[in-house]
Image (cartoon, rainbow, N blue to C red):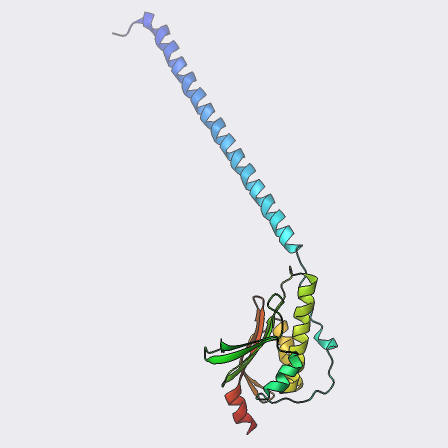
Length: 216
């Protein structure tokens, strides 16, 4: 039975419950606000760290500048794709020979290395069908010495390419160093199966059997 004497008590109870709910609501809102603020702070910190990392990477090294135009355009002695001795002479002295190597198509081949094992490599891989020239492609973070050797290797390859293909061969090396990938292209009488510079490696692969056909 509803009684007037109970009204103040009921009103007081309702007010207490309302205040409790309001306090809880305010507490939840404050917690959510704190969580949002915390999330924003974390996101800002991550963003700042990413910026720092990106900045550090950008400042770590300078790419090698290949000034191909200064490597000379004087005439060179032409070399046949099968004159292995003359090809080796352009690259220098053979340091090691691996007769159990493989060529581009996984056929038996011989690899001639012109640098010691702890130095940026310069190789000729020769098989019955393919001739491959390969050298170390320096990374921007490499040492000055490694970059110098990489550039020296490219310069020798530039000369040999001109010996094999004329001035067009020099342009092939220049294109490779500028990031172009060459596939199934005949240049200066030589069939280039693949030529590219990426991932620490430059390679130019000649298909000897097709070059012999074009020379006959």
